Image (cartoon, rainbow, N blue to C red; front, side, top):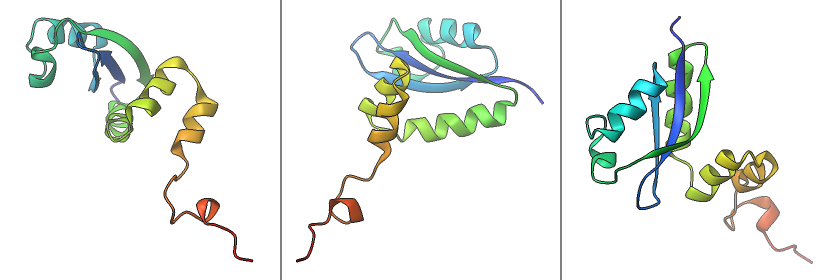
Length: 105
């Protein structure tokens, strides 16, 4: 098993980029030279704002895929370590959810 990292970068214009790497420092440096991602290339410099290490890079890749689907507010909660808020933001908010349906009387 090869260890790996999932990471979130803050781009110069404020957007967030989520990625995965075996060597975090080398990957961030590559982003900042414009050689890692087409997305970050036009948003330099980038700053790492979150990372988590995994004992197996496959787990880091799985976490990356999950986080990429999250809303910006959910990513910001993760970055801030606000895990209670992260849980709240994960709750279904649409009208089809049982907690959001009006009570019948």
